[in-house]
Length: 340
Ligand code: GDP
Image: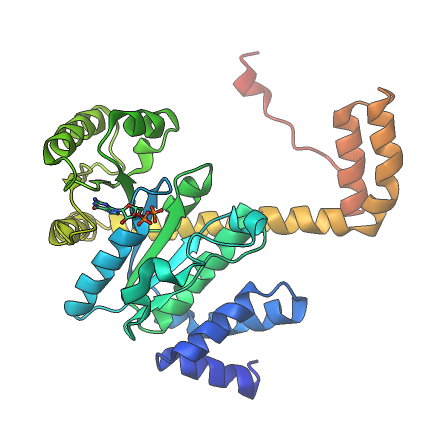
């Protein structure tokens, strides 16, 4: 049951009040148990009003032009009558205390607009934790009437796969030089890109065209993210606001290609299931580490493993047994698969 105050918060979010939205996001970002219970109630109340936005992930190395691009896109979208929310997944913010979106001046024009809501990455927690909060913040923004959600992430580490797992379309922002391409290919990020942007095409249009052609080539050699979609490559200049319509046209084409086949919704359903399982995994892990029986038997068992008096497997079984309060029986694989 929602308290009157939380019902007012829900109403405020639904009415598109920015203060209410910001407050609701702060509530979901809180690590306090009672706040978490309230946050889930608020989210559940808002859930029927979510899902009506296009969710776009934008990734690129620092300096690639992400904030310049998002600002240009945002200003253009506002002119077309859209409302956009910009969120970030930046696990490094928990180390630096800052965030890729922490500095509002990065999107000066956009942040001054009523139609745009910009929220920096939560500044604490693991990548999983940060992503979880961002995903929930995205739902709140949708309930609040934002019809375009941009999730920005830095082009390093695991955060790209994480963001690709929560958006409809994952876009890679690249610079016009080959070194960059190789990096992305090496890291296996190209495979998850639904669209590639070659930014800063104004500096050397020819080089940008060459890079775009190389990317197109590379992408045709890969298995596309969908059988109904060949990821396009778009050269543009975020700084000069050139090529933004081409980008939006590609987003439209993507929707036209994937919505009628049911693939668009299937991807969201799959993401929701995967999200649930990842929350179960992290919840179990937390419960395990907080379990008093586990905590009391842990030192002796760790020592037994350290001194080779107990195998890691038997130690794990013993601890899992202590956690479950019953001997732990690992379901054994059927022998049929072993070829015996
Ligand atoms: P981010 O770290 O990926 O968010 O990159 P920024 O948006 O902060 O951009 C980094 C630098 O590149 C800034 O000095 C921008 O002005 C510049 N920049 C971004 N887009 C373009 C572009 O299309 N053309 C040119 N010439 N410079 C750009």
